[in-house]
Length: 258
Ligand code: NAP
Ligand code: MN
Image 1 (cartoon, rainbow, N blue to C red):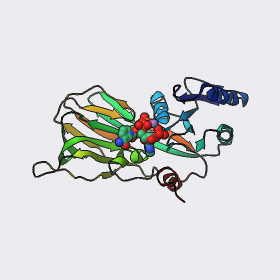
Image 2: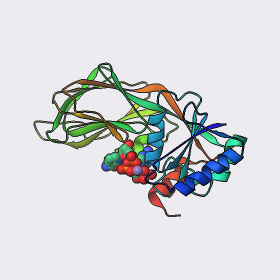
Image 3: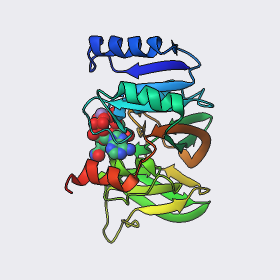
Image 4: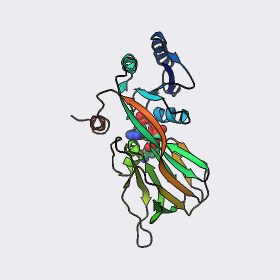
């Protein structure tokens, strides 16, 4: 197999990575920088996000699989010392693949893609934005920002905003509010809104200097604009162990009690 490795060199020990490379090569695989069949990401969730953005223009026929080195590791099923097991499972195709459609935000001709969420934020002045769902007017939001997340991203920023946790096998778009102003003059839904995968959310911002955050990345500041959110055709195939269970994952990452 052609395998690419993605890690954050400041966070992972060099010796640890060279040992992994040796094991990959000794099993007859090839380590490549471009056009991999498999991407092994080593680190935490942020490293998975980095890996997806690195290969975002070339996701077809690529599988992603992670080796967790001690972060939260929501996108992982293999622990630090599991490289041999991970390679065996890859070779035997003994895994469960979860397909994740990337979120897309379109601003004029610019396109932004994300695994977890895309955020429209105004850090200094409150953001004012009309919100439309499938071209129907919902509200005029005023507050710090709005977040549109995917199902797999529902446990990230969205969860801090008290949004719903959604199983990744159900494809949804979820709109959540960051610090909404709600009084007799301004009002918004003040709850997270979960929509089906074919929905389109349009934000028409009335304020300048907005930032568009997508996963760990952020755009230059934008003047008032119209942003259209949807689920894109681009999809990531993320591999877990064959006995992967979302409920077990939620228990182990967020609750931690048997
Ligand atoms: P980070 O600051 O390290 O991420 C924050 C935490 O979110 C980390 O513990 C990370 O896990 C975890 N995480 C990432 N995606 C997740 C998911 N889908 N489900 C559950 N937990 C998840 O930054 P980062 O690692 O570059 O990740 C960027 C993401 O951080 C953004 O997409 C956003 O969702 C999240 N974020 C959250 C807040 C907030 O909750 N207030 C604020 C900013 C950003 P690891 O430790 O394994 O990396
Ligand atoms: Mn992180």
